[in-house]
Image 1: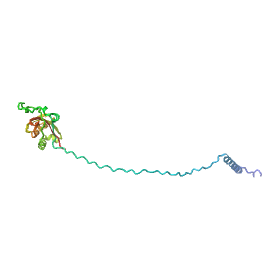
Image 2: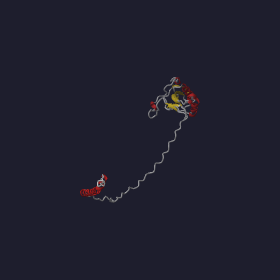
Image 3: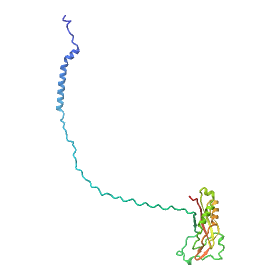
Image 4: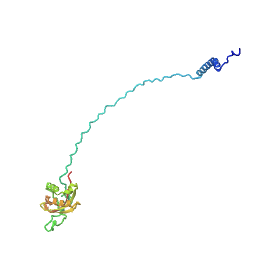
Length: 222
């Protein structure tokens, strides 16, 4: 009967019975451990990190700079106008003056026995060269005799022509001196040359016949 009443103790029963002892033992150990840490740990303190206001130093500003006004706009130059005809004279001798060439040193005017000057271009002394008088007629002749095919293609050229001008400024003879490279321009220049009229040339105070070489230029007007 006594053996039947015996109760067997399980592991759970033994754990419940010993829980109180383990709990209070662990709590006391933890308290002692923390107390020891507080004793051996360094003491922490606080410091003042507040910012102080420094005195602001005033700065004197310079006087206001007066900016000068911009300069006035420069007037644009006038647009150059291209002349209707560009006829430049190629002087056979350098321009002469009485200061550099005294009268006594000048060659005498050609006489009647000097031969036929118009036979071929040659040096002819003069103190005043001939000047073109009918520029408008020459400009019209340039437009009239301009080769159409070359003009439409925008091609230009310059022909140098010899002129034999008599004592009255009339063109007695002309011939090709330097070609432009186009036969049409060369022939047109000779046609224009026949229209030209000049003032007489002078050697000292006497009218003289002279040979001069001039450029006749054909150019397309833009």
